[in-house]
Amino acid sequence: MRPVGPHVCHPLPADPKLDSICHVRPPGANSGPLGWTVEMEPTRRESNDTGEPAPAGVDRRTLLKLGAMGAGAAVLGGCRGPDAGGGSAPGAQNRDAAPQALFSAPPMETVRIGFVGIGGMGSVHVRNLLDMEGVELTALCDIRPAHAERARDWVLEAGGAEPTLYTRGETDFVRMCETEDLDLVYTATPWRWHVPVCVAAMEHGKHAATEVPAAYTMEDCWRLVETAEATRRHCVMMENVNYGRWEMLVFHMARLGLFGEILHGEGGYLHDLRGIKFADTGEGLWRREHSKTRNGNLYPTHGLGPIANCMDINRGDRFDYAVSMSGPSRGLQDFAREHFPEAAPERRETFALGDVNVTLIKTVLGRTIYVSHDTNLPRPYSRIHLVQGTRGLFQGYPDRVYVEGRSEGHRWDEAEDYLEEFEHPLWREMAGAGAGRGHGSMDYLEDYRLIKCLREGLPTDMNVYDAAALSAVCAVSEESVADRSRPVDFPDFTRGRWETWPQLGVVRA
Image (tube, rainbow, N blue to C red; front, top):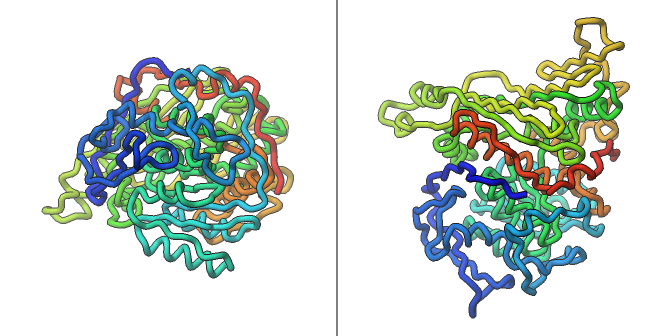
């Protein structure tokens, strides 16, 4: 059900590098295939509470509903292209209607992909996909022509047909979705474009996959859910850490019952990003802006995803409520003073984001989860990765295990000692795949599983409800922080179906 009461959303300042936005006009003589006309016009530097500039003549509610308009007539079997007919729009009235089953689409021999955002992570995914059977990269979209051209060369080197390039600006993905006959649109753009790309894809009859987080406002989490339901399309958040070696080992051990009943988890994203946030390339062009205006857990899914899998979130349990608090903001200011000259504008920037955020989540079944966000201070990397049950636990960084009746009393075992017996079958069978790219095999395995599920007509490992639930931690934590750590409820994006949906299984290659 739709959550009651306002959720705090902090608008981001307009990116000075982006001087135009996508204006949407009501149906008319020049309407597009869904009855709405998309035009490029100079940006009005007004903001709404989704964090994006507000187009002239389009109010906030209309803007938020665009992701749900015109796609109701899309049918399950129409995976090869958009349905040009109109249809009823999914709206707030549908937020009480429960989905009936985990969604799967008809199998497809070849997955035709349009890729949006081919920078650092996008390049990793493109190279992974080119290694896979049954994949065609047919369209490439990036605001930097050189990125798209580089990826085109990779496609040609791999023996593929020359893809069409879309490089006319930040909303050229809309033209790609309107024009191309695709099965999947995959986005690895900056965060604020994840939802617009996914919605455009689904409205035009394509499945969607996105880097993390899928969204960072509650309204956009609902927008993804409603659009996926209305169009009968997958919307998958690509959480690579779910496919890490130790995370999959722990999931396998949990499924085998070694830890007993799972009661508690701890995870986080503890990564010194000061140099990245102040860089003049890549994520430095946009990520620091979020730290200026938002305060909460901005990046929860890496640490939370594997814990959610072990706890059967949305498949027997769900997030109920959370409390969140942030400490002072010091790290980015100190870094700027140490690395920029006195006259540099970076030294005068101020930041809302507390250097360390701690969020505590309670599930409906009473389990507890600790999630931390720590990206502005000097420190070694960690995701914490603790999963604890009635018979034992795993704790990462360093990786160690304690199992009652198997471990020596009050002493950790090395996690390495459990690999021979409990290595996840997928890792055992595909060890080394994707090595040398990005984060190694975890990136490859997440792409492999997505393609396998699409080709075989299986439900995807992570669905739109998982994407919404994990991403909602952003909005819930920000609201709690802003109100003296008040408990904030999570909406039930599944509308009650979490109680009956089957748990994730232990899959093989």
